[in-house]
Every structure is written in structure tokens, then in C-alpha cells.
Image (cartoon, rainbow, N blue to C red; front, side, top):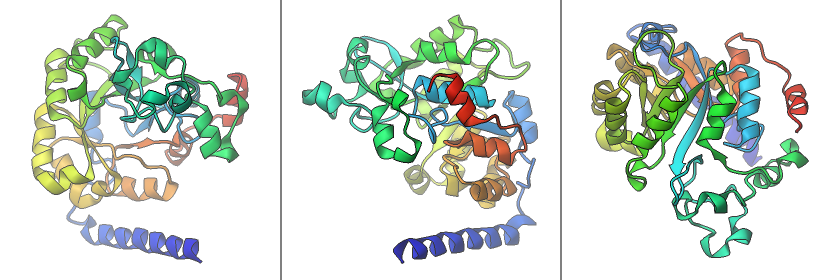
Length: 326
């Protein structure tokens, strides 16, 4: 009964949002395709399929298999969170603590709740970053996921390759890792991912919740598009207009939490020449609604569903996993 009530509430909320959108649509500056000129100018794929932590809805997030699977599907960008180990290795990892997605509690019990910066790379390489997924999602579990390890950023670059998808990289809590922007740009430039002019498509996009980090990235790599991530508390404290002004100062777009992509949000973003990539959008009805409201692409854990929504080919996921040995 509770689950049925929850479903009714969600459907009612979606219908209300749609009705409000229709009422405001005539005055909105963000009909479908509204952001396409700004994406094209910045060299950003339109509409953008951003594989959030890889194909993390079907494989352990930010592991090699999640990214290889997303690459094989044909996504536009592989999205990753960049943190730094105690000995200076850049890795792809989201959380502030290793507790949720690794077996640190058994391997390093005294540091079970510690963050990436409290471990050396050699220590992190000993952790199992895949078994948690099998336990959390038994219907998607695979024996080969057990024992997967945390991925280094240089390994992610190898997966993307010279002819694969672009990278959409977040400086995660950069205040904890002074100088991480310089290190990241140096690594990416050495591999040919950093544009030296604004011509042609960008194979690299930077993103951050930190405006200071984006300013530094603008100084270091001025021709690489930058997206200002916006969360609920940020919008409540600073206001949408102020955040958009900051985004326009340092970059090319905003990546807001999904409900901040209704037309009264996306319209002002487009008026400032910014693209809008909401996160994290995993249901087809959400993709339909927010695209109607003017979104220019999405961060998603289900790139397969987003590709299908955009009418792009979707290879067989099971077949890809089998080919990859999973």
C-alpha cells in the first residue's frame, strides 16, 4: 500500500510539473533545441549523453567495466570524479569515504571511514570496489564484478582512447587537494585531451561545484568547456540568478540537480548563453519532461535508456558484457 501511494505521489508530481511547464512554455526561452547554438559554440555534443560514473546503473560505479560498457554503447562522455591519493595519484572516486563502495572495513578497519586522501595508491589497489554492487543490486550482480578495483585517471584515459568518447571530469572537493587542477590538466594535456583552440568538438569538459576550481581551470585550459555544478543548498543560499552569473563568468554551462531544470530555470540559463545538463536523470519520463523544458543533455546512470530516448542505436548490453568477460 505504501509503495502504491508513493507511486501515485510521484506521478501526481510529474503531472503537476508538466502542467506548470505547459502554462509557462509560451513565455519560456527554453523550448527544445534552445541550447543547441551554445553547445555548438562551446564544442559540446548536443544533446549530450553523459555516462555518470560510467554505466553505473548496470555495473559498479567508476570501475573499468562501467566505463568500458559505456564506451561500447556509444555515449558522448565518460563522467568521473577526480580525487588524489596520499602519494599523489589521481583516481576516479565519488564519495568522501571509501566505506560505501569498498571492503575497507575488513582490509583497513582502522580507516574504514577514511577518504581517498588518507590512502596511498598501493593501499587503494588492494580494495574490492565491485562486490558492494552485487550485494546492493542482486538482480544485476555478476561474479566477475567481485574484486574490481578503484580506477586511476590515467587508466580511464586509456579506456576512452584516441577515438572514443570524451571525458567529463569533476574536481571533487578540490579544497582537500591543493594543486589538483594543475596536476589534472598536465596529465590530460600529455595525452592530447586539452584543446589549444576553440575550434571543433571538445573531447574534454571540466565540471565542479567549486567556482574557485573552475576559475583555476579556466586559467590553465581556457579552451576546455567548463560546467558549474549546482546543488539544492547552493540554489537556496545564493539564488539561481547569482549562480548563473558565476557560471557565465567561468564557463559554458550549468549542471543542476534535476528539479532545477524546469523552464523557469533553464530559460534564464539559455538567456545567458549557457547549456544545461541536469543530474542525475535515470527514468525515461524524466528525460522526456526535462528535454521538453529545454535541457541540452543529461548526466545519467542509464546511458542505454538515454540513447534510446534520443533515437540513437543501443547495442545489446548483455552481449557487450559477455564480450568484455563479465
